[in-house]
Image: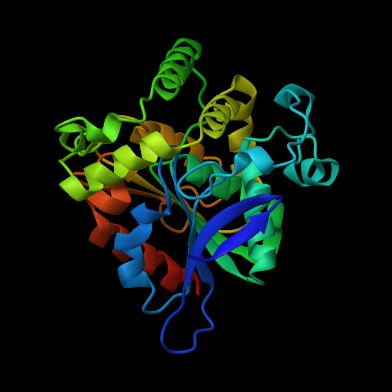
Length: 306
């Protein structure tokens, strides 16, 4: 498996190219919290016939695990940071696990792989990272497609409950969890509309246990502060690239109303066609629940702009 160094941390990635030479942009897939690059495989199998596809594990997740070797920038509250991720990039003032920090990781990855034009496709937390990266990289990013990713509304009690629960889950993960009978069955039914296959249940258990605790906690806490939640719509509002949002009709983690709220800040909202697409019979893992529909939507979007 190819490995590339990003700020002292080895990142596992795969760059799949079509058999025939292609001038199309590279599709860069960014996974969500406690997941890994493997969840993109159902989409890659179809899309890689035409488009170069890049999948990678975020720092601290999947196989990109050596976070201890990273020289971490100082942690500074978001309220004290610049309101421009580009300025943050220059001054290196953002915290290690913020959306801006992960966006910078992606920018470096694209530079090292000499990718000049790309579309970013991100799931959940990965969608937020994609939006920040599009703002940071400018014209290099030709468009963004967010799956099960929204936000911009901060409800104090709900976020505090979510943060507390998330911290408890991360801190109490036993390494022997994959050995528990029927645990695959449980994970195959979490956050989805219809049960996944046992293979996906097993993969979710493995990624859940494997995630580095510092990265898992850091990305959770940094991405759910009131300042960060309220700042995301500002990022969306200044993007000049096309941005689309795919929502699961039965997603209880990121409901459609929150996705539509974030999408409404982009200039294309309700203009020249809606930039929000709802996927029927789908929960929070659209890329493995409804891969054919997601592939069809991505293909249509790319055809519209390329």
